[in-house]
Amino acid sequence: MVLALVIGVGLLFAASWLLWPTRAQEQALALLTAPVPEPQGRNAFADVWLLRYDLTPAERVRITADDVERFNRRGAPAFGADGTVAAETPGFASVAEGRYPVERLQDPDRVLCESTGVDCLDKVRAKPEQVRAVLDAHKGLLRRTRDALENSDYLGMPFRLTYETPFAIAAMSDGMRLMRTDAAQAFMQGDHDGGLTRACRAADAWRRWMREPDLLIDLMMGDAALSGWLDLQGEMLASLPADVSLPAACASLRDPPSLDERSFCRVVRREFEFTRSLIELAGDGAVMQPGEPGWLTSLAYRKDATLAMMAETRAWYCGGSVRRELLADQRVSERASPGPWRLECAANWFGCQLVAMEYPGMTGYLHRLQDQRARSNLMATLLWLRERPRNGLPLAERVKARPIALRQGRDIQVVGGRLRVALFEQRKAAYWELMVPAELH
Image (tube, rainbow, N blue to C red; front, side, top):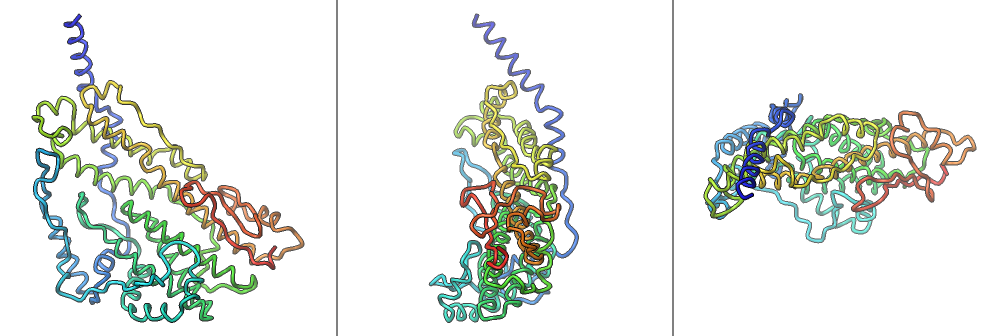
């Protein structure tokens, strides 16, 4: 019986070793490791990477090229026997640090609008003098943020992707607070066209960046920024009469939202570069079982098979079922994590544990993108209502009569003088709403 058991385990192990990775997994790996095409147009990376420095365009290009070259030849530290990084290395910094003055936002009383959220106009109204002082003190950062955002086509990362890659887009947070507050201040001072124009141009720029996003953090910051600008635009429109015409910069608000279902697949492919760098760094997987010899770990971990399994899991987001749900604005289905008691795990137990962490993976991010599309559709519906006569019909009836292009997707409800749409991602709110001017009720 013992001999039969040993033979049976050996056969299972051999089958697991020989039959995996499957052809489907290898094809998924080929898809995710193929070079991702560079978007066309102007890359904002140099401007964003050095956003806090007041430099000429030529200086930004030169310093960024130097930084990219230094980072991409930088050696990655290895893991030690205890599963930690063998030698601590200092974080990567631009050569501009220490050579040029750096501008950091000083707002101790938090009088500026946050990059997301509502009530921006109320915040500016409450402390106008303090708001004006902070904006005046940071005119340079405000100008550079606006230029970086509005005068470029995309944000692409030229650094190789590893666990220590610095994210340039993080520098945009302070500048976005300045931009939102500046737009709100102009509006509150009576320059309604100026405030709306700044808000609409910023939203258009973020939409442009999100057409071909690079990394997941870029996509999520873009989603948060767009939500914040739509909130501010909704506040502005709610305080204006319905017959006030909008500035030309806001024309895109009227357009039915589009969704390129391939954009998220691009992010998935780029993010897989992070995964691959970590798997490669871990080598034979000794960090999975610190202190054990490599040959023992290799009995329960296969690097190549693990990568292929992870690729198959991630490639699902580029597949037909997700694409159909995105285009139909149906909530992208979440997947249950597979159990470890599978034949392919017999020779790759640790690899299966790593792959199990991929479920449900990025589904929540997709829900947020679907919600962004619904918000844009709701805003376009509000503007359509503003530009159409009432004809004696109730508001709910007029909403139902909107053009077919605005009826693609989830339902719009009329609740208490507001337009409301249900959200798929409900950690912060179950609905998103826009106030309808009283004369349109």
